[in-house]
Length: 391
View (cartoon, rainbow, N blue to C red):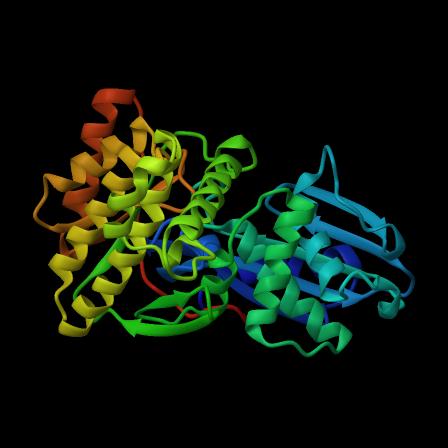
């Protein structure tokens, strides 16, 4: 089993805490975003992959309406009741992901559950790395809780439940990318997502490449004004383009780069810059799909570099630490492409690499990064892996 050591730790903790094995265990992976950045809430396209690190969530029904959550990685326990499930405003805010998932799994009608539950969870996704540890927790919780309560929902619906938990409990207005990637991942493949139709397909990458995640030491945090302001700018731009283009426009997915060039003058400079990023990203994902069909990984990698430049200059969701990593990667022929992964503003970079040169790549990037910041980033080879499932 992938991540057997983490699984064993969760099972042992559950039995030690509650005196018996859990009724259901689910596993969900984190994700890397490979191409298509901030396009999900613009109803656009994304290439992503489920990674080989994730979260296990083990649960059983309680005898009463009490809910007990044990977070191994935090070394903390949170208790409430089914009737009192609500957003945790301070302290154990880590509980918001599973509590929100519980709430919306029952569509807000928690009384139908009749009893609460007890759960233990833990994982090995580096926190704050932009690898969607929160979405992995939500998807693992959704699968395990659905199992013990006898709830049947398809994978896309469960992904939307996790997204709603992020919006209403965790306070992050994210798109559906993280949850869908965790749900639909497949070993050796990318997930190509269409967030207008919520259709997800897997595209094989072939055996000769791998990804490397390089975790900067810049704090990664989306629950602040930066994410929300950029999403608002995209919505404002879509409304503007709907007023000037002679075609239906509901989201930036409906706008081409040539149309942006022609009509950008009607937007403020900042809003125009923000809009250029997801518009360009959609076009890069569609071109990337054609390149993968031909097996042209190096040109696909060039699109990743273009994507990062767009983040750096247009969306301004990069940071000096991430730029240093990408610039260092670009100097190596064994790195085909590199860009920030996820929301940005810190976190990690995703590199498309020749896996036989992984040690060389990691050493070079660490050296260049340390020369600027005095410490070294964490580098790890990532294998695209299977998505969330019951164990």
